[in-house]
Length: 340
Image (tube, rainbow, N blue to C red):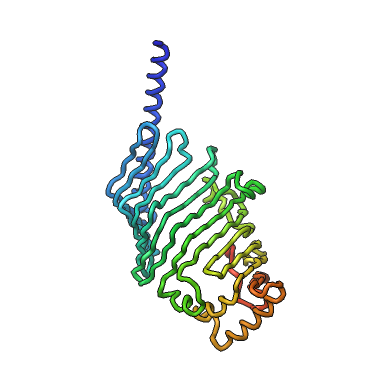
């Protein structure tokens, strides 16, 4: 019994020492980061900084947080920010953000009001700290800009994962699964008012979903600053936009060509495509005088599917140019900039 008591006391002392050493290291690291920000041209301030959570957690609590890059004219302000990690797995970090925060852009300030805004970053326990997953999720949120626009959604979840449990992530080295889901997306009412009226669509987009597998030239780990991971291939495995009775799905793959431009093919399937033309006219993407010609062309293409309400079109990226079916759209995006 006495030996067991001694072991418990020694274990408790060691664990307490581990927590205090770890908490001091976290506090010092955070304080050093704020102190060094000025040397990088940043303005970083916090009213208070503390580490609590003994004995099972490291909880970094910040209040009155303000970050700003004067050169770029961007910044972020929040009344508080909290970062958590369990003492037995410090490689898994969870950040809780306030229900309201302000993002400053060069020409406007955007106030983001969100319910349950959380971010999770998980690495694998290894010396190179390889990324396992990043997840950002929020309940109902709304963005209000000083430029006059608003936007929101009922729920949003975005993630990047290298988990082997995720299909496709473990099939190739440096491969990551990207995912984005938005529910009841509400674009700025003033911006879509005409589109809604002309195309007969609801003011909210019920679902926006995107799942893709990205293979990079190097892994995402603590050496990424030196290895500079770049996109090797992007495979769009699942995507959906459901807006009233208009739905759009897309699958395909792209990769940078020898000049760094996006090259490949993405196949689109549009159900009830008839909503598209009046929506594009209302958005100013198609001139009203050619709307009927575009409608006739799309109707002819839809006849090839055997379903008059289904339109299938390939997006072709080749030779630095993009075309949607027979329609040329312009230059392809540059995925890799020139070097040397």
